[in-house]
Image (cartoon, rainbow, N blue to C red):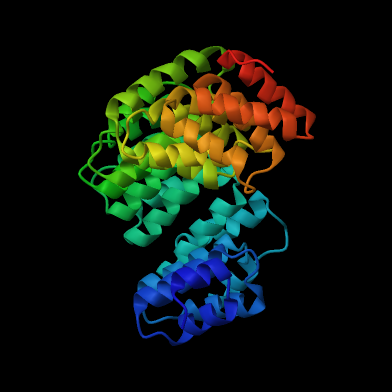
Amino acid sequence: MPSLYGLERSGDVEKLVELLQESGKETVRQRAAEILGNLDEPGSEGIDALVDAMSDEDEVVRAEAIDALTQQEAVDALMKGLGQEVPDSGATWAQAEVFVENLSSDTPELRMAAANVLGLLEVSESARPLAERLQSEPHPGVRARIARALGRVGDPAVTGILVECLHGQPLKVRREAAESLGRLTNPESLRGLLSVVEDDSEALRRTAVSSLGQFGNAKPVDALVERLGDQSDLVRRAAVFSLIEILSNVPPDKSHELRETIVDRMSARSDPSIVASLIEIIEEGTQLHQRRNATWMLGRVAGDNATKMDAIDALCDVLGEDDDLISQFAATGLSEIGGRSVETRLLEVIETDQYGEDAVAMAAFALGKVGGDRSRQRLEKLVDETENAEVRRRAFSAISKLGGHT
């Protein structure tokens, strides 16, 4: 049987269903349900297996199946599995009222499902009854789902109740409350999150730090910069991601000063996990603005870091990006790092067949800032050999900056 990690990557519904139905380990069944909930297409087989898992002997597996079905927006199947019917009135208050009533059910699974669906519907009128139930709900698993739903409904009036949940509650409730406060992004939610960024729980610190990245202003920056020195690598990485996200959201007239401040503070930390986090954003990020900011930053924080060569490789790999800003930031970042190691790596870009002409052109541009005699010789040869006008222009310009002559 392939590993769960392998099944997650392959999206093998049949094998995941088999594990969910037959594994003797609760943790395996729970993880299989979670993966099925995250798949793009679990199909009827996956949905049916999740419905069956709502009757699992283990409470955590049942809860995970409910979450997975909600994630798939399989509300009809979810409620059918609980012996309920979904009204046909659509995503309106009339429909939401049915689920509000279910918040008072004697069955924890039905209360949990009702909270999940109300979060999915995002009907503002459901905020008050959810908040009232949160204060009286005895089951911590249901409280966690209500806290999550309140963030998705997005009514700022419930901020204070969520802030209260950051303290004196089981960890899963505190984490859901912290994540929801990141969705609300008002001054009260910010104060609440700042109150737990130094919490003893690594998991809560990481959730709070991640939520701070949702604020579209510079107010959380000082706290996030402090978390760059957190004892947990996961928290430090979350802080890097949040700082990048804030940079992407602040107004342009404030971004330059803020960017320089963050870079100075990152460089002072000289922490390999910062470089690793930036590389991860560049290589795996799905948001263009995040990747641009991470590329810009990487060359300015790598310095003499132990992972400097990793940074150089990552920047070389995006020299040929379709996005002009990323390729330009990569070239200037390599120039910022400088030194013989950068020159050697840029010459490899020119001399091997692994890179396209766009990357070669940007490598030539960067060599004009960091190169020496060997770069001049190679660039002169490139001018004579290339048939690409942009490569020739960049190489010729670089030779001029090096003081060479054609």
